[in-house]
Amino acid sequence: MNYLVVFDGIIAFVGVCLVFSGIQMKKTGEPSTLLVSQEEISKCKNKEKFILAVYKKMLAFGFVLLLFGMISLLNDLFFHIGRIYDVARLVFLIVCFFALSRIREDRERYF
Image (cartoon, rainbow, N blue to C red; front, side, top):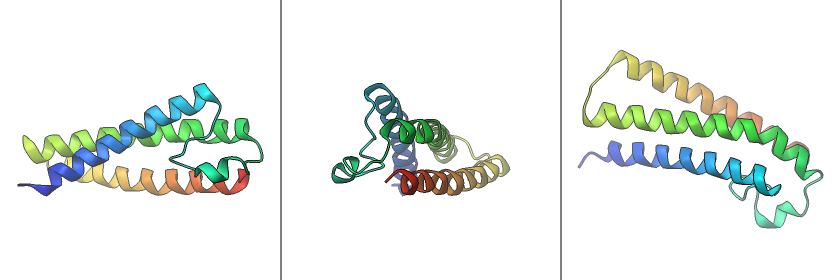
């Protein structure tokens, strides 16, 4: 069994979870428990501003994870696209670094 296929599926699934969690966070006005523990939510200085600061970043990061997971899954199962996959992997790593650092900064600012 090719374990990379499982890993690719997990990446895509986490992307879907981030997108749905971001949408749910925007609808309910409560921070997502993917970002903040239940105990910390009560310590939030300003929930609305935190959600506005993190919402678009969560959606963008989720879509990138979903897209990369699907590209990687297709690469492992059907195609071997070589250079295009290398570029996608590089973009994925860069987006992960920037998205996670920005979300961490926002989390520290409001909690």
